[in-house]
Length: 163
Figure 1: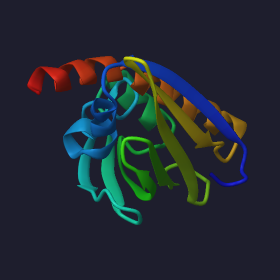
Figure 2: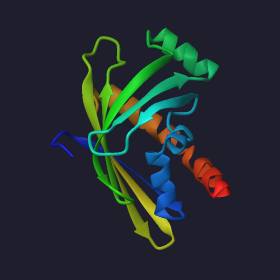
Figure 3: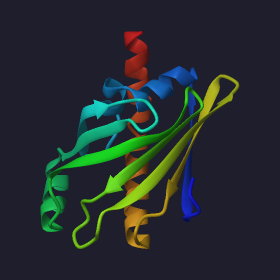
Figure 4: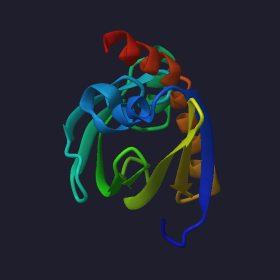
């Protein structure tokens, strides 16, 4: 991580680390859970290597989210760009996202580091995220990330059902 202020989010999931790794590192896995409730993503490129691109559209899918985005002069769908900056298979994953969708703000980079820590039959997923451009946007980002984490158990169950 950089020396910018960070926030940490931790969750524990039952099962092998490769299932969680799959959610973060494959097109199908990423699309199965990424995005807060009321949003979905369509991945265009996921090049899992240091310097590789992560390119996807974040799409408001719920009528309430669509209305909120329009009311706040934000696009209902926007292209999102990231780069993988650290990869230690099944252990750590670093992604720099370009934040370029906030009206009135210049684009900026935001780094996220995900660590997968085995604890018996569980995996503790620790996500460290740089604070955003303002306390308001940091709070919004944390609420959105917390919302999308509610999708992980169902995505893991679906993955395990296909194995």
